[in-house]
Amino acid sequence: MWVLTKVAMLFFIGSLALILVVFGGFTRTGLCEASAQAASARVSLAVSQILNSPLEDERRLVPLEPGLAVGESRSAKYNMTIARRALPGKNFGALWFYTQSETDSACKGGLQVAFPAYLAPRLQLLNAQDRRAAIPGFDDAIVLKPSMTFDEEQNRGPGERTRAVVVIKCTRKTIAQDVYIFIQDCIHDDAEQCLNFKSVNVTDVGNVCEFGV
Image 1 (tube, one colour):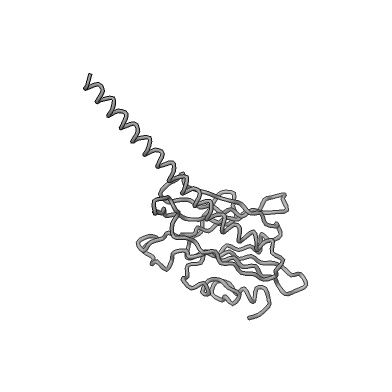
Image 2 (cartoon, rainbow, N blue to C red):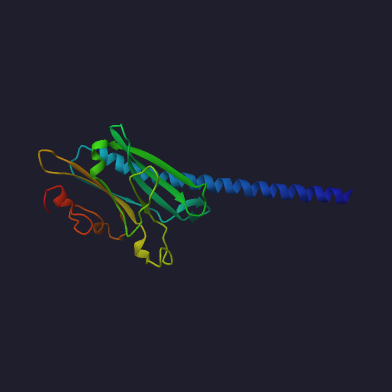
């Protein structure tokens, strides 16, 4: 009898431990998903605000954390994809912001932002190095690497890690007033080295919009 009771107790303790492990896994995934969704939301909100801003020229800098929060003071490595596509027959296109953990496929979160179709030829995604992605159904995409470490990406240094997303809107100073949108994967510690109104290395925004610098 005692042996059966002992076995039952061991079975109960084992089952309880398994439940706690599974629950802990769900909790960590839930926190990670919320963190991924928040990262996508911060960037998509900045882009949406610039798209709808009445200002002719504007620049936003959105810093990215090096990891997604998963609880217990731990973080998960992740990447963020920004993709653009035109929608045939529609008067608008879509920008897709998708954040995903590199270690937990269930940890992900994404949002879409609409933009006027006429902007499509003048909405540019600017990447660091060769971080472009071919995604079916999208015209262009870049992959941001906020969690990159020294020994990754063919031993590139930590200076290649994505520090922030830079969003710039500039308006050509002509009668047509064409609007340009630039979204950049910024890998510099100093934000002023990222895309700005005086940039000449990636694209000369001042000349593109003809306001001079």
